[in-house]
Structures are given as C-alpha cells and as structure tokens.
Length: 339
Ligand SMILES: *Cc1c(COP(=O)(O)O)cnc(C)c1O
Image (cartoon, rainbow, N blue to C red):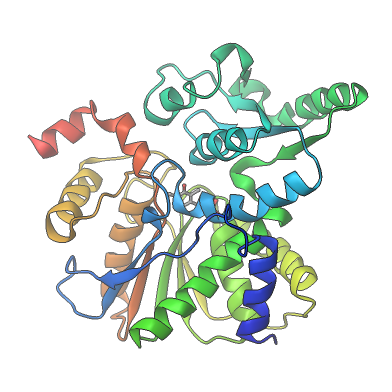
C-alpha cells in the first residue's frame, strides 16, 4: 500500500507539475440531470483540451517530459487514420519540436473528421500507410524504419497504438489523484466509477492506482475497442508498470466489472440510438459527446445502472474526444436526429 501524498508526489514529478509549461490535468465534476437522479456526476476530462482528447492529454503529460529529457528527436506514432491518439500526438509532439512519423492503417476510403484535421499537421506524403492486409506486419515495418533512422544517428522512439506504454503510466494515474481531489472538494465519495476503454491504458491505471491506495470503489469499464480478455492482459501489464513505478506489490484489485457497449458493439460503429443519446445529453445537460467513446459510455452506464440497480454516488468520466464529432456532421443519421 502507498499513501495518497506519495502517489501524488510521484505523478507530479513525472509530469513536471512544478513547471510553468506542464500540462494542466485538473478537471471538475458536476451533477448530471441526464438520468433524473441527483447522485450521478460527471468528471469533465473533455474540458482538459479542445484539440487533444482528455485521456490522451493525461497520457502525453508524462510521455512528453520523458522524451524531452532523453533528447528524442522523432517519434513513430502507430494507429488508425481517425485515431484520437494520433491526432493528439500531432499536437503534443509538434508543440515540443519532436518530429512525428505516422504509421497508419489505411488510407481510408474517405477522410473525415480527425483524419482531415490530422493533415493540418502532417502532409499525406509523410504518412506511412499500411493496408489492412499488411497491418499484422506493422511492427516489422516500423522496426526496419527505426533501424534506418538510428543508423543515421537520429534519436527515435516508437509510440504504440493508443499510447499503451509504461511512460504513459504516471499521467494516466493522474485520473485517480484528480478524482480524489474532486471528492475532497465536493465532500462526495463515489461508490461507482464508470470509465471507457480503448487500449485500456487509463482505465487499467485507475484500477492499479486504486489497488495501490487500497481504495474500495466499484469500477465499471466499458470496453469499446477490444475484448475483455485483452483488457485483462493489458491490466496485468499495467499492474507491473505500477508496481515498478510506485515500488509496491499489488496483491488485490478493487472490484470491477467490464461491459461491451450497450449498442453498436464494434469499435467506431454508430446507429441512430447513439445520435439520439448525443442530442439528449446536449439538451438535458449541455454537454457534447462523441459517437465513438463518450456517448457509448453514457448509454452503457444507463443500462448498467438499471440492470444492477446501482445505488450510491456514481461518477461517469467524460474522457473527451469531441472533435471526432466533426467526422459525423454530414452523416445521414446525424441529420435525421438534428432535423
Ligand atoms: C483514447 C480515448 C479513450 C480510451 O483511452 P485508452 O487509455 O486507450 O483506453 C477514451 N476516450 C477518448 C475520448 C479517447 O480519445
């Protein structure tokens, strides 16, 4: 077990919180009216940044200082053409004068939203497109490229898909230290916390951090992009990273449940239920949600709260990603809902 102060100090050091240029990782909480209950709250990680999705800002907050300290000049970023992590990295790396070399699945038949915005940062000719048929060889292709660059004396780093990497751990753990701050400031202690998972890095860090503090909360993870099995193997890796980072051994995890999305199960897919929910959340609570992550989190949380008759204080983490909505503005389902 570790004390909260000690956890805070380690996260603060890794994210260089004492410096003026550090990413600000404090987000507020407020009550939701969305569900006609007074004990459901939302954590507004979507407010952490306009361009970088909330969870990505947390991850990059510890990755970037480490890259700078190690004199990294170039980063290979791997992911989908519409990935929030790829679009986020284009911003955080460029800002820090680190060259981004994208290896992306694609090209997509149609460039929308994030993929279009990405080309503000990187020219299409600089993207290493990998077709779906060759995607399983991505690692070899990246390794070949990295060896070539290294032989030229360039200091290069590879950022895996979704930034699931030990360097992202301290920043990811900030979701926990910041939620504890929210609890202190509001006087509300959360019995249930809902979070979405892509690669699962942030959700897994939340669980591992809660284990280190021996915090008793029930966590609800909406697994959007992967299988429960892969989430659990990612969790084992993050537990190891956490043990190394905090110098503790984690013997038991807090209680957690995993869910697949209540609707539009496959990653990135949408349907009219989702667009209706996006409109409902906007009308009722004044919050923008996106169809890939947060709207599915809200819908699935609603279902889980009903199915399991959840009582007590409930927190939904809105992880951001609103820019992805730009890719759906001309979607017929969007138009059908907005009218
Ligand atoms: C990437 C992302 C997630 C998932 O983060 P992981 O750490 O990969 O699980 C959730 N929400 C949004 C908006 C994201 O961009």
